[in-house]
Image 1 (cartoon, rainbow, N blue to C red):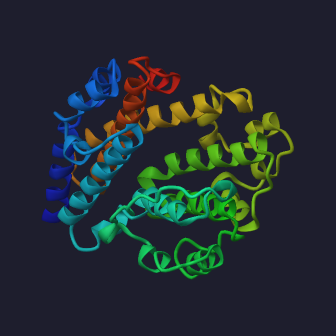
Image 2 (cartoon, rainbow, N blue to C red):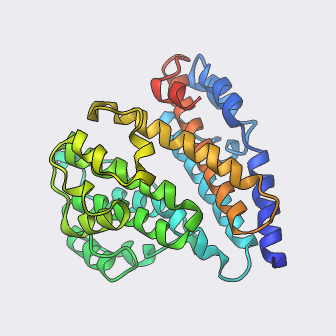
Length: 309
């Protein structure tokens, strides 16, 4: 194993060791006010970015920005070309940047946050940032590794990017393929059986690549569950009906935590350790965001935070 991968793996483990984990998130969630939660957050690596947060949304975004910064730092420690491993794993930040450029629902003018600074982890953001219309966004995506989302409505753009992120992760990061399949299951199930929408053709093709040809064509949710390949059924084990998909989401995050931690414990330093660190760091940020919401609600942990514990 090269010195670059060893350095990256050591750095990855060090980053994970500094984060609050489940116990720290519980303390933040206990509140009983957002101010109390933020004071507890200040003692964690998230404190630097959250220092100026005035409300729960700003604090949660600061947590996400901290995660992105740590992924960028980690990418800088990897050997030449190693950052490519992290690009699909950080795709959610580029999706969030695109979402902020889309028209607000019902014509309402939304406050547009500062875009996440992606650095070496961007896919096509420098070009997407200059797109002035949804049609231009679609054209840029189609000419990039994201691929054509199949439409230029806000829904089509975002859905296409989310499924493409799962497809790209499964291809480029073998250690994360199971997680990518799980995301594809959740996205497909919500679109088909919660919102009752037909997947755009490029999204359907990506779903077929990840889940096989039978499940995306299912007419009912039970049929969808039955048609999933064995390797992807785990994510819906606790969601017998579409309205229980939030439990499946929590199961996905718990699996990410468990399997990411297992990769971190591997004896050999290399890409799998780095992928495990990204997984655990991502879960930690997601859990802390949920904890801040609980603190803002008077210290009452929500169902999602309870389900992840």
